[in-house]
Length: 254
Ligand SMILES: [Zn+2]
Image (cartoon, rainbow, N blue to C red):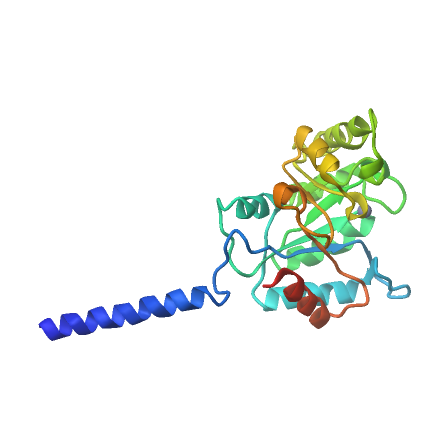
């Protein structure tokens, strides 16, 4: 009986060591691990003009399908922030998929593709363009929100926030936030800096105005402004799914 007990102890000991070791090989995330955040702009049915900012609908779907088949699940900005603060550690295959500039195809093409794979996206709205030709209407933005996507802020009219002064801040952040709140019923708590451009003053301003977290592009993260320098990978339209996965893993070390 004694020998059997000792044998069982040994087995549990070995299992414990294996689980510890796997933890150091990327099987679990820590608050220090960056959650991959992807950033898309224009999505076109016709693949005529593929650029950094324009991807074909078919290629976009191939990216989403690849993420899904690789076991990824989409997360929202709240999750990313909780992860950063160590309050909720996200599963290893978490990804946030974001869309900038209010394009009409975000509603007509991106959202249906995301939903087909059980994914939800984060839409950063530039409020000046709401309802203009080529851009989403308030009703479309509301539908995205009701379908479980996040609707957040991309300022009023897309200026370099490092150059804002005085009343500009009210127009670009406070008023634009109210425009979004009037559509969704929820005050946006996250912002994507236009052009990914920010500095410490910008981070301080948006924090004062109630923004809980802000997204740049792949610039350096700031140790004192971790929540205001969350990185995103701009996915060029020329990348196929394999290239996107490779770059994502490289940049976010997943
Ligand atoms: Zn933009």
